[in-house]
Length: 461
Image 1 (cartoon, one colour):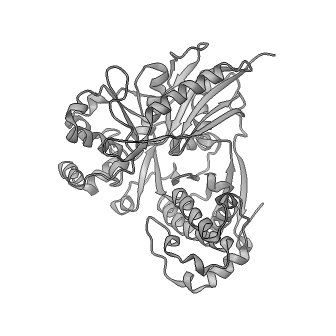
Image 2 (cartoon, helix red, strand yellow; image 1 turned 90 degrees about the horizontal axis):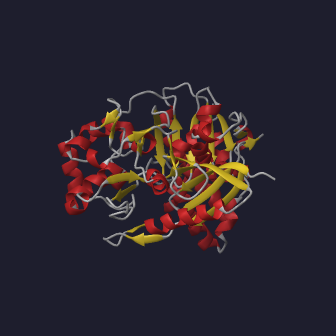
């Protein structure tokens, strides 16, 4: 029996890393996952362990190359943004992969924006809200100002997806989906790096920009496989939808962040939208995608732990809670839900007393109601002023019946679909390289949709 041609995808999220093999029909034929190992940076702040990640990549590849049933034809990467790995002349990191949640020095932030037109104008030009370390370009600025001797030793500043590619090819590249994700580096009006990159001497640390579908030869022992340059994970998740649907849509990509992506909204960002955490990404072909974000996946996990601790249950229970419209009716009629909704970056649930709920399932329904309030506000930022009538949801919340039904109730005029697709970010990274490794035409049935309607407090068909 001949070996099955496959593409290997490393999908590195904030909490887990995965290795997946897709066959030529884009079915997953192998999957392995492992948690990220944390370490601390020089200030004692938690960060990813680069060496552990590097070893994991090589160990995982060694393992799959030994599997006689598969022939690896190509390798690509999807990984989270706001990540820089600084590589010296010897190809090794000179500093940790700093955590994007690390507080940014206020004085340094003020200095930066004062030098480059002020917060509002700079944010509009770069489609990047003021987010501190989440603006990964400002991580470079901080390193230059606080550790100039280390900055001088940097040969290449690589976002995480491109660092993973560099490990296997030795060739450093930049790539637009990573550059264009709230980095504060790209001037969306001029379609080039912002002027500060040149003024601060950052440009000499940035490798040439490669197209998302570029491939290189791998250095790791194997049989002539090709290696992609990697994509930012949210942009990778959008690729299958752009290739399968031509009518306007919004994709809510759910995970640690719930990101509403509207590739059909070409309106310029306003200062008010930017202050509400609305921004633009660059999709894999370099076109802008209007997006808004809420930290709902993270908040969900934290609040589920709180619910489980209070009611003496296991967090695993909440992976599959059925939607109960009667509970929603009860909660909507309660005094607590008559209070005016106050928009913010976190939901109202953190301020609720769990003793007010009859049981954990009721508390869980309230948690999702509160998260949907956040989601509606966020999604409306990219929906308004467009003719979009479809919302696709992928990722963790697409499998959550309470979330999906409440989203359908919240958007009664929209068609709401839970997208059932195996690992959308990995799949997006795989099909970006389709022409480089796959002999077959791209399948037209990559995405299975489950339609939710708002009648009688929501149901799915």
